[in-house]
Image (cartoon, rainbow, N blue to C red; front, top):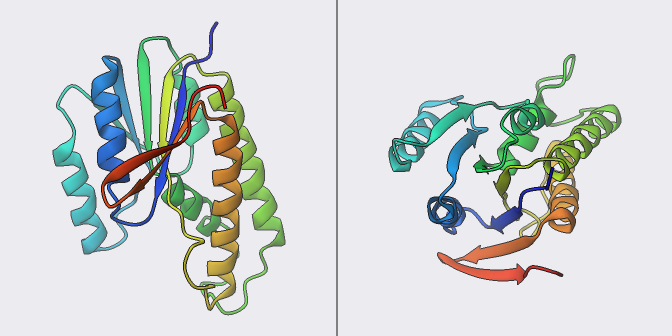
Length: 191
């Protein structure tokens, strides 16, 4: 079975990444599975999720899964399918915060074991992408261009997302950076 194309779309907050990824999905002509990783932990996030839902065409199938992204990719791996994952940054946050027995504070977490668990899950994600017959588009964030986070959890998150973005970009057939609603192809096919 031939592997489907893999496209990574990255950029800052409110840069237009999701809209660009959705445009690519619409133009593909494939059956779209929209894999949403966000969870509504507060009213503002619930409103964001609702706005995203309203943008999706009615023929797209939505799968809401905050933790088992590789499993969903494996389940829907078929030629003629396109899986749009929105977004890797929230997925990574979900994985990192899932830790059992972690103190509910950013002041003194002990994360070496959690970092390794997250890295193993990211490895599994890369394997699911590499063996998928479906086309895959993953939206992610660039969080390392700002200030160094003040809290240890923020620094661990920033570092892990940077590692995840690098690993996925190396697997991707194409990578786009979206800034001010404009998409710049930073990894064209064959690079």
